[in-house]
Length: 354
Ligand code: HEM
Ligand code: HEM
Image (tube, rainbow, N blue to C red):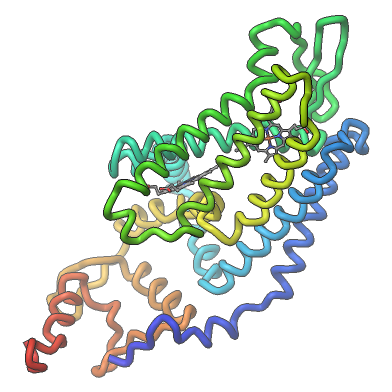
């Protein structure tokens, strides 16, 4: 088998072109900047104290966009877009939409697949994910000037979205309490989730054997630092008459910016990658209804012809060659036969074939 191994990626390196992704990333940043200008009504509702957050979020947005393009170009984005037409097939469009909605609800929002691994892992992820999503949903629109609050009377505030008045509330109402204190609740959610994750990482032997500090601990430490500095802001303004408030606010800002810039390079990038895999389940469901390929060795049907073709094309594009001595591709064999063939090729204890 002339099986070029993973580190032989010269082909991949040649395929990656950084100019287009950089230009697309710059374009994404320009689009976001334009939306900030429009949404904040010509920066009228933009809070200049949040300038650092604004610049960081615009740069991080463009960087994430361009890294996604680089990642897609080094795989085979062409196949992804070509297969999108499966979704839009006229006869199956309604069924596809129902299936996709179910996948989003069950796997993305409720994260059933993590629940199946362990309930505590599900709780850990649920708290971290929803804590971060809610925090982002509150802070980004505020930073971009899309939402602002105006004092209307002695004790009455009105919320404005994109400059349009929406909801008024009394400062002492329950709604105002949850609106203005929401970040403290999301911070507690994230802290609880990180505590469960770190506890597992310190106790679970399986996790201890494979985990790395940068990959598995740094994301939690960054999230904890954001939450603690955020909660310290509340403590400072509520209980200590604003003591050290600007220093803590600057620390919160610095950690948030570091985390935004770290996002594309660490584990947290799965926030962007994972949702892109929604289509995989749909693809597998539709592939089952198509012509099936037979294993070259045992003749059993094991995958669709389309799936095998796509797999061969992607594997080749990322620089692997699974052509065997007989000229056939390893992918043409079912998983069971692959295992049998591997065992037959593995030398026995004295170097003799098994
Ligand atoms: C704001 C969104 C999200 C945040 C902040 C987040 C954060 C995290 C963190 C910190 C971990 C590491 C936990 C550990 O140390 O064990 C993790 C694990 C994981 N995440 Fe996410 N995540 C997000 C969204 C998603 C989404 C949308 C998916 C998939 C649909 C996903 C799937 C996973 C999976 C499968 C794991 C491994 C969980 C396990 O079994 O232990 N995440 N996530
Ligand atoms: C896990 C994510 C985050 C959590 C848990 C969090 C938590 C907090 C908390 C608890 C506060 C204090 C709120 C109060 O005084 O009642 C705060 C303040 C703030 N946060 Fe965050 N935050 C997060 C992410 C972000 C992000 C992504 C941004 C910007 C894009 C941001 C920008 C701010 C700003 C501007 C303030 C007000 C600080 C000031 O007065 O200067 N936060 N945050």
